Image (cartoon, rainbow, N blue to C red; front, side, top):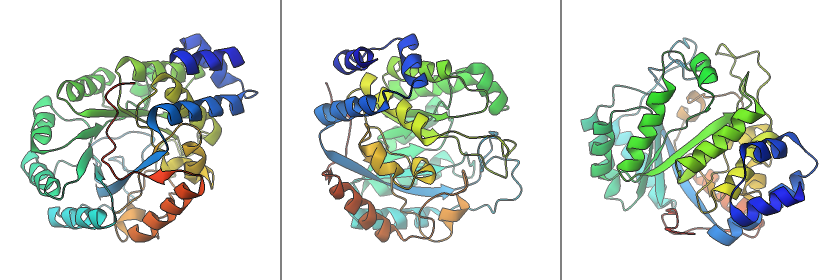
Length: 342
């Protein structure tokens, strides 16, 4: 097992079978996490990139069984932010020292190409990098957002198990989602993807496939999070994922994709009080604090137990900075693009 970990650290290569062996065993987790941290330090340094998250709509046309924003959830109180409110949050993010904002929403068709292009152009005037996380669009739409100034796009594949995807994402098509990723890559975006760990019916082997898929598409950012059952979804009685398996998948992603950006996801801290800091010590180098204000934080209810819903953006910025400094790291002052080469 030590030899497997050392080989992954040295070469950036592990087979599906080797990944599955490491995921199934818990005896060598400490060594795996230490190796991931060394790779992170060597290729990415000690900077932690902060991305200010703006959750601008919880309305979604899709009906994913694991997501609290799903179309058929009639319990959730829906909202969408006016373009000027989005811009106001972006200006405040800039004032807090963020170099990137992440515009995230459900697949809300109210925001037409023209509306979003206008928002992107105005935010770009603030000298901010822009990440979009707004779901499946046509290549033409992606091209319009890129031309307007969007830099990155986050579209999680969620799982590479096509049968599992078919069951949990009704009305959607895995091949179409993969095509969206290829469109984004070819248009010059920094490409972000990721997966949920602990979905009902998911196997260790499919998690290994996820990791190899991210390597195959040469993703620039990968977000790994545990599946947390939401009481307003069809999966409300499922067991959910664990913090430890999620962070192991994340650590193995770091071994294989050595110079990419990996966020310490908020969902990890929902399951463990020190989740984001532990993730930063096990391969992650990005945190995405919420800069959305007011009750919108609570209403963007992907899963229950979401942290910091009553905090202000200023408090979140100060809190995470203190935690980062406390582990001997520092907050980056640049845009945090993926290094050009290893």
